[in-house]
Length: 296
Image (cartoon, rainbow, N blue to C red; front, side):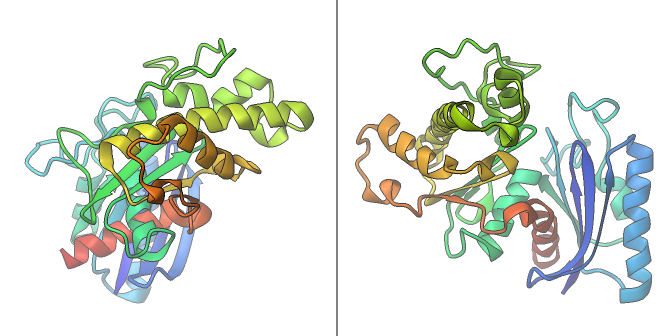
């Protein structure tokens, strides 16, 4: 099965042609600009490969949010109120469906990554999974009984409240909430607090930064663990690559859960894991959403 995929990010779009085995046949990427020109570039790429490969079975869109994902809504497939200039209330699904006349699946980039990690990555064989991306922002996707969680809106795990780490008086970077999980632990927050991007820190500053980051990530993960009872938590994004971060998150999570509810599974090394698909989790999420749209 050949499907098209669009990972619509706040800073760049990644467009792919892939298969239901997770193989990528073609790929391009370009900066996110205004909606009209950015979507035109995405459609041009997809049309080019329709002409050479034949009609796709479906298109998947894994997008930054917030998104309207209620099928009965007149704004289904639209971006909602976003700080990304010019993108509030932009229709993502309509233009793609009109241009290619195939089923279109859409979800958040993190829900898409969770689907991809379950299909091809670190969460294979599991039905209840949480995926976090920690980078320019923080987002969380959730699968329950194998399906992405939706309600009045999709989960917004980056905007939960986390306790401050001792001695941290940083105001936070979130434009909506200041010191929420994203505001305290995203990549720009690390850079603003420590005076340099996380990957550029070294010595004592790097040690302290990773320890503090592990505390915030453990607090954010604990919220998801208690609310959604996942079998595994997968962490991706650029910040997740900091040396020693994931083991420290596991240790801090165990400490902050303090023996409740006492499940050995939540203390195992395979409970909190790095993304098996690495930086490909997001783009492959779009392909996975396309496969899901094609197969129902």
